[in-house]
Amino acid sequence: MNDSTQNARPAPRNRLAEFGNHIYRSLFRYGRVPQDAEGQSYAVFNSLFLHIHPVKVSRHSLRFGYTLGLGVIATALFLVLTFTGIWLMFYYFPSASEAYNRMLDLRSAVDFGFVLRNVHKWGAELMVLVVILHMARVFFTGAYKPPREFNWLVGILLLLLTLGLSFTGYLLPWDQLAFWAITVGTSIAGYAPVLGPPLRRFLLGGDVVGQEALVRFYVLHVVILPGLLSIFLAVHFWRIRKDGGLSHPDDNDIPPKGGGR
Amino acid sequence: MNEVNTKHVYPEDPSKTYGLMELVKGTKPTVGLQPDDMVFTWPHLLVRELTLFVVVVAVLLVLAFLFNAPLEELANPNHPPNPAKAPWYFLGLQELVSYSAVIGGVMIPTLIVLGLALVPFVDRKRTGIGVWFAKERSLANGLFLTFLILMLVLIIVGMFFRGPNWGFVIPWESAQ
Ligand code: HEM
Image 1 (cartoon, each protein chain N blue to C red):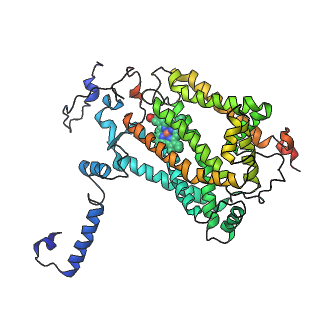
Image 2 (image 1 turned 30 degrees about the horizontal axis):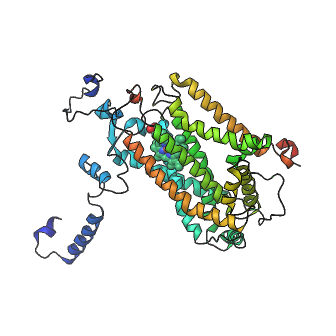
Image 3 (image 1 turned 180 degrees about the horizontal axis):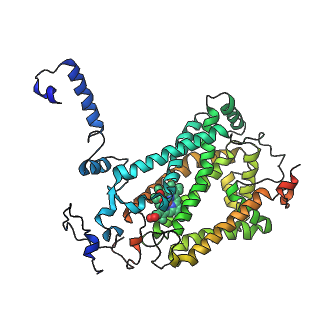
């Protein structure tokens, strides 16, 4: 900065540096790593991706032993699953005669295809587990109590969506495991009086698991359920902020009918 | 109005000056907190989140290189495996269904979801928030733990102790 501002025509090397600096500044408006309170605040609220966070959080909520990081881990898993899922879509084909071959291709013909599929598969199993553990954490710390009742409800919706995503994904490889697990699973739905059979037919697009079911599960798995999960995840995070950050021992005995929530 | 404990709000740190910036009406948890309990999201929270993210990716990569996701034969509607099992998280339900389709497959799952949804509206005491296994909450926590363990037992039974025609098997004895 110093000599380039003094010389009318800076040396070419400095001009190049200035050009780079200009681009850098337009991307990261507040310098490199913010060091002072002002920079740290701007870093959060001037970034679309960071401003879902408050500028400050309580130390209590940062303690790993309190949350066990489970909500963040679930979010990370969802991001990884979205990324690998979209990547898998380039190879996958929701057809009863093709789907299985594509699975075989992932093992042999696609570079690192087995890693891609394995990450998606183990990530999905882990996500179900982690979301259930996160719910247990929330319960055992009493974090569903006022003002967080609504976020508990949002959470249950997220749990159901997670299960739905895992279940619909289960059919897609179209192997024996997939076919019969879904046959068993959807027949459970069929036991419900009145609503059961139509629900089952709606899910399967017929009376048995076949091509129609595969397309329906595919659309649910790659568009509808992840879309809903993303929307309600945004609501979930929004509520955390509106509820004043994570639960804290200071939340005890707050008077009922607290101000406008 | 609650009483304000000024000693609590203004800790004695001679190197700092504190001023009253704002009077806030409300019950947000931040109200009672000491100013020094709050830290900047950047870097404190973000570094932790990023670290966890990296750990998650690393663990998944290790798992992916070590263990292959299962892939069986091509689906064949004419050859049902015996027993056909649901994914692990539904094995508890499948186990219940084996006793009664309507009770196990419909009523109990509905009750579970409804019960979970009603939790904050049934347990309305505003105590024991913010700590693990608070003493005041031992009844609620005990009930929930029992529920989790029951589910786990059902899943384990469905996973390991069920063989052909959903008959009971002892896993270490049936292995030829
Ligand atoms: C896709 C699934 C879910 C994701 C990604 C998710 C994510 C998160 C995250 C990142 C937090 C911040 C605190 C933490 O990391 O623990 C959180 C808090 C919370 N979650 Fe979830 N969650 C999910 C499912 C659930 C479920 C199933 C429930 C309960 C039924 C739930 C209820 C809550 C509540 C009440 C809080 C506030 C906790 C507190 O204030 O201490 N969430 N969630």
